[in-house]
Image (cartoon, helix red, strand yellow):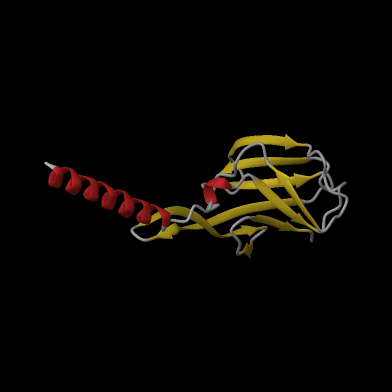
Length: 154
């Protein structure tokens, strides 16, 4: 009986050790992908340019003729340094749509042709997750290669 209890204890300890080792090999980083696009980074815009913006969501491939949704944003706490300004959106960007952003300055930016790929995240020994990475998209027909949305002042 003692031998049986000893064997069960050793087996339990061994099983616990293996599961701990396998779990500890996995990283726990957050992989931000195409389903997490809830902000846009604007470069070289003044606070007045970004005072108010209208974002229209269009059906993909409709040549900006079929509006699905629209919203007006009046960002709060825009930094006074006009180099890089991150504007948080009240709704996530859907890469299955096209977008048109009109700023209070009158500038209009059309965002389309999102390209994504499935990539590994949190790799480790016998463990990994996948996420949908944003590879590129177009702003006014110019390709932007980035994992986040960015718009440059023209």
